Length: 117
Length: 286
Ligand code: SF4
Ligand code: SF4
Image (tube, rainbow over all chains, first blue to last red; front, side):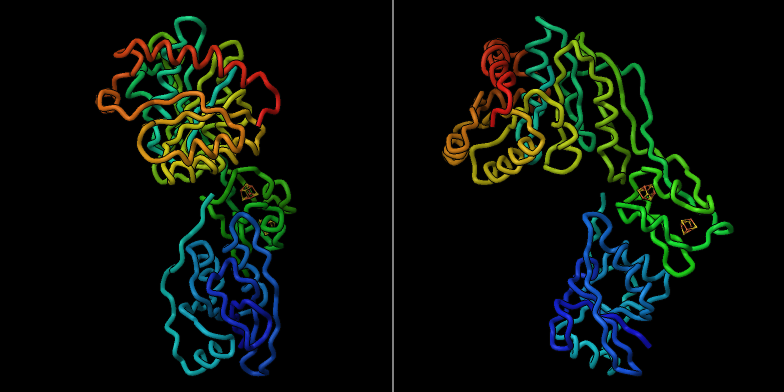
């Protein structure tokens, strides 16, 4: 299964980027093959969360691990059936380990502040 | 002639300046007042207009016919505001982000998108103290104020002196109210917070190339930081309204300064006749 971790860099030892929509990179990690792919994020002035949700879902991730998710992104991810895990801290490797250990709880609603207009 | 009264934040005395300027000048020339503070309009408290007609301002929201949609993603790719998303076999329209530009409908290769009108707010048109008065009222919960301001500006009569009370802040609605003005009067308080907000407001006015004059309200409180900033930046301070118990009392009772204290009528006239005219005419003044 593919999961997505938002990060400040492209490697396992890079820190988590806590803001889903405006994260520097989306790292796609395959839990079976352990392959790691990085996709750079280039959020526009408007609707960064919506854009991010499309990138994550478009790359086939079934779960996303990040710090917080705003309302627009949450709606997009939920529509795509992507599981959302928030409150991640530390490095990408930490987040993957925590995910595998079942330490995250799923976010029922948006956690971050939305940005309208 | 078009003058916009603005400030980096609310509660600085912007509406005091705008309404008194209008009242002081209306005897000598055709004046028109536009309350562009569509989230919290309050000029009516001082001007007591009689509203004669209203007009609804709408945006057109896209609606997708899922029976026709092929989930090709063209609409999402075209939308500059990320207001429409194609995720798997779903198309989501984010109504609050949508600017109603219609591009998604135009690019959809199978004609799956239609549009439904959605009211953002209304414009009220009327008469206050003998001059035309209009104001925008943004519907509750609505985030998009700029279309209302554009609609208000449509009603400007080029032969009269239009006074626009801008929404506070530095966002798109404020920019819309300042853009195209011959002069922006920026109202601030002589405090560190006032200076912070003034800097932001100056940035906005300069970004749209509108000449500026600064009005210091509650003069006497705070420090001289605003004054030093204006001197450094070459921005003229065109009026000072002192921190005064009587002025505060009149404000709280909704009584215009110029009605109660005739010397203010002369001051607002002088503001326009001398400083203002000179400033506005100097092209590209900082
Ligand atoms: S462009 Fe039209 S067909 Fe393509 S995803 Fe959008 S609505 Fe569907
Ligand atoms: S109408 Fe314009 S802003 Fe709204 S979703 Fe379509 S392309 Fe985006």
